[in-house]
Structure formats: C-alpha cells, structure tokens
Length: 216
Image: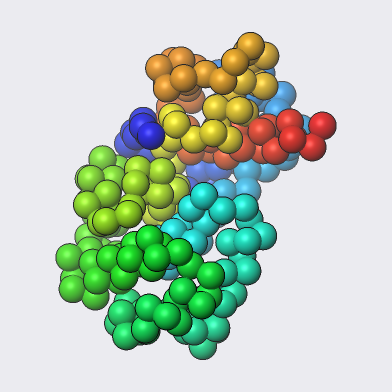
C-alpha cells in the first residue's frame, strides 16, 4: 500500500480552515462535499505508541469488534493501553484471552519492545520527515505502511498525507468523480495533485464521502 507524502504543516484549527478554503477553490467537486459535510474533524489523538497499539487492534477488524478487544486490553492496563514495559510483562495468554490473534500479540510485543528499548521515541518521530517515519515504523514486525500512514495523520498530525491504497479513500474518490471503478494508486495520485499541501484533509473528506456512499 503506497502513500504520497508531502511537506505540509501540522494539523491545527487554523490549518484546517485554510485547507478547506484552498481545497474548495482548487477542486469544486470536493468543495461541494466540504460544504455538505461541514468543518473537517481531523484531530490529533494519542501519543505514537498508543496510536500504534490502537491501529494494530483495528487491523482487519470491524469497528465494533476492535472496540471490544480494545476495552479488554485497556482492562489489562487498568483502564488504559499498557505502556511498553507493562505490555512486555503481560503473559501471552492474557492478551490472547482479550481476543487478540497470535500474530497481533507478536506485533504488539514488537511495538512495545521498539519503544521500551529506545529504538523508537516520540521525540525522534516528531523530528523525522514523513518518509523517514514510514521507513522506521515498517521496520517493526507486523507494522505496514497503512498503519504508518494512519499514525502520520492522526497522531503526528501531518497535513499532507495521501494513502494511495486505502480502500475508503479510493471509494470516496470514485464517488466524488463518478468513476466507473475504484481508482488505482497512479490515478489517485493524479487526482490528488491539486490538493497539496493539504492531502490529509482531503483524505478525511474522502472517508466521509465513502461513508455517505455506504449509507445511501
């Protein structure tokens, strides 16, 4: 799964307002949806470690199932996701009993080990550019580019990320432009070129368009 990364700013209310105006001016079709959906709801949430744990729990699971597993994992951490050292101290059986697969248990342990050892730190990630973040995170066993892209957008607040292989974004673009089929990465890259340097914001609106498609 590919992602086009840029050098946009960090997500904050002023940037979101500026991005919505710029996107509406450059792409009238997207602008119509921006007016329909309303203000962009992108918010930075969670430190990178917590964001990675959250993303791993949601990999290949429906929202309700992932949320149920998340509650059980937080119970093991006394109300929050166990921090790296605490997660490494948990027995595998405890995590399996929370509903995690053995593969996800291994991935969570790999994430915890990377942070516990200091190989990855929040400070280092904040200082990296987008491509460096993806390269660093995908070195962790079980962490792919999609997970790294979600962390870039939702935890680090990078404003110019376009996950080219994300199904929801592809579906949103298909509806936005009335395409006969889902656009591939190259087509989506071309479509998204006018959205620079606010492609994370455009991505959020594409997710809303895809959701509206399911509800129609």
